[in-house]
Image (cartoon, rainbow, N blue to C red; front, side, top):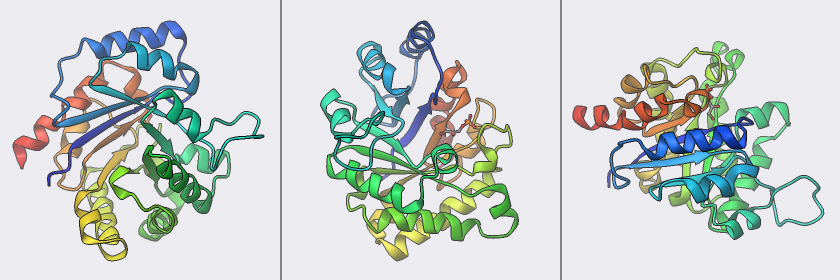
Length: 255
Ligand SMILES: O=C(CO)COP(=O)(O)O
């Protein structure tokens, strides 16, 4: 079964009500391939989720950018997975490198979060990726394998997981991974899934790339056989997000 192209827009901690409305209007008016061939998921900050959900076209979905690791309760400032389910939010991004590095989320903590969110029926965009130092010391694969293992050890429902490979050195830096660099890691990740989780999961799990993706570099990346879409930061707030969604066409025509 072909892996459906997936494009996520991670708005991070950006936006006002007015800006959110403008972005949603721009996306609503876009002509893009049907949802049968591309899955588009927009991830605004928590406070804007209901607004975006209520305004955006039905073929787009929404994702939260995080959720609590287990059942909600006395955890001031947290948002529980139950709340996302209650609001009808289908997706959640977990393990983003900004949370791993700035908020000290460990591999095990991210694995627990992914497992708990999946257990409630949420779909998860699980982020992994190495730092520049780790890449330069030759440990890229060891790092992303350990991050993926921590997820695989606890997560059972891989049908609801999209794995986002986001090299930390490429995030928000303008230094996009080359198509060859990204393809190499995606292929290795697929092999890792094959050997450690199973052939079916390896063949069907979408592995998407994130890190300085824009309207200009998306086509070459999308043409790589193991790149199944993107998780886009800065460019997801701009019109070029539409070009990134459309980069699927290039991929299909080259297959
Ligand atoms: O972190 C990212 C998506 O989650 C990528 O951010 P940029 O596209 O701004 O580099």
